Amino acid sequence: MESIIFSSAIAEDLAGYISRQDFSQLGLIMDSNTQVHCYPLISNKIPHHQQFAFEAGEVNKNLSTCSAIWQWMTDCGFDRKALIINLGGGVCGDMGGFCASTYKRGVRFINIPTTLLSQVDASVGGKLGIDFNGFKNHIGVFTEPLAVLISDEFLPSLPHNELRSGYAEVIKHGLIQNADYFSTLKSTDWENQDWKTIIEKSVSIKKSVVEKDPKEAGLRKILNFGHTIGHAFESFYLDSERHLLHGEAIAIGMVTEAYLSYRRMGLPQDDLDKITEMVLKIYGYFDFPNEDISQIIALCAQDKKNEGDVINFSLLKKTGFCEYNIHINLTEIEEAIAYYISLKN
Ligand SMILES: NC(=O)c1ccc[n+]([C@@H]2O[C@H](COP(=O)([O-])OP(=O)(O)OC[C@H]3O[C@@H](n4cnc5c(N)ncnc54)[C@H](O)[C@@H]3O)[C@@H](O)[C@H]2O)c1
Ligand SMILES: [Zn+2]
Image (cartoon, rainbow, N blue to C red):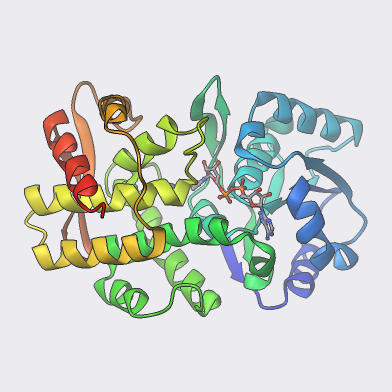
């Protein structure tokens, strides 16, 4: 497992970490936003390095950006002892890591996640990759970074909706593994958190799950709670004016999948009500036309995690306890979406 370093002084800790490594050249990959907001926090402490910035956004997590990154590595003359630092959100970590782990059959890389989402989720577990011809994370590898350095010093510049999006994964961690954590989150004002504590707790939950099942043969699937229906909403509205950030879509997924948990797994109604109340308070109700429902349901059936015709869900038996490989049919998904719609007022 990669070493995860929680830092309260990122520039110094990064410099210290780098000084203990043996490398030929140092390369830093970032996006156009982290170049402006995050790079200045570390730039004067890093030893001599080459840098590459790509245009921010999921649309650029593709082969043509990879091609530009590999060309830059080639132009810089990086050999197999080069060390790459990825400074950015999940897009930068997934794509920069993918490019590093494939360049000359793999050079080492360090991830410095700068969004809440990438700190609590994408930074752990070694999944790297890019989108391909409209399929999300379609091409990729499992490779662990040499280290992940996590600091909340980057969060103040993060747009509010991006912070809120990452928080959906934090809520999910409580729901699937730790009821006390969920209760604590529910009783605090989500915007005024001690982020350092939240990040450490969430990372420890994700890490403990991934360590038991690195390649998602079983248990790791519980991290997909909220993601089957959530992904369908995310994909359906991807290029529309109703565009949802990942966590905003997962918020809808957690409510609808909590309802499925109530119907199929015996999740107590009181737990369902608490989850619904919390999610709606933070994310509001997402309004969408009834005519979209059938296509959203059809997208659930296309989820990568399915095997054959069966739609596989990870559902809650109770708050803090999640089971996986639960087979759900299209009618049940429709009922879950109807439950969500019933919350509109
Ligand atoms: N590998 C995994 O296990 C894993 C897990 C979850 C998500 N992901 C991937 O992560 C991506 C989503 O990650 P994300 O939400 O971090 O997206 P992102 O990398 O696109 O970052 C979101 C936005 O915030 C900007 N930004 C980043 N840090 C900033 C900062 N500190 N201040 C100001 N702006 C900042 C970025 O430029 C971007 O515009 C998706 O591609 C998803 O597939 C991967
Ligand atoms: Zn997610």
